[in-house]
Image (cartoon, rainbow, N blue to C red; front, side, top):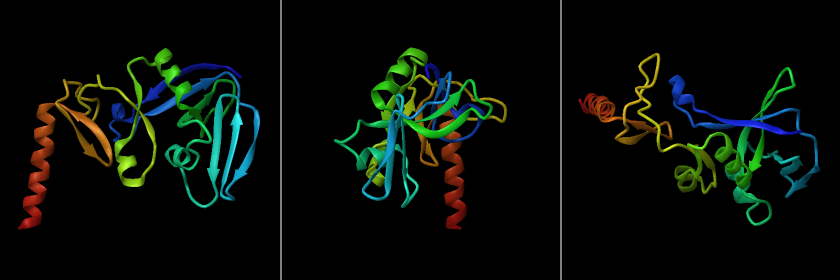
Length: 186
């Protein structure tokens, strides 16, 4: 199995307010290199080439939960969506990569993007969740067909996602929220 590419899927370019995802393309499905083991009764962790596969039977977890639970024992990981070039149903979201390897792939294939710690997840849940970030993005306000693209003034938090908006769209956003507050007060 060889990694043949990587890219960032940014849902905001389609008008969907959600976090960007790191996608990794391989030429074949990863095979087990270290068999899955049980940890603490609830967790199962295995290695598949450079990828890590983990789960917790007690609850739904993400890489941020894994990084807290196994800090000092395993390297920090980043969730990825794996696309296998040679398989009919090529996409799976069950894999993660060590942070250093994920950063190498971004430098090689998506140099404008970085992996940054999600402050909100750290503050609210004590989670160490790393997410793709690009400081050179234009305004992400969606007009029904495309993003505005103007120079962003500042990010606005929408559904826990920091969405960069230009000055005009920040004003629109603030006006909408002011109208809602006024309507509630009456």
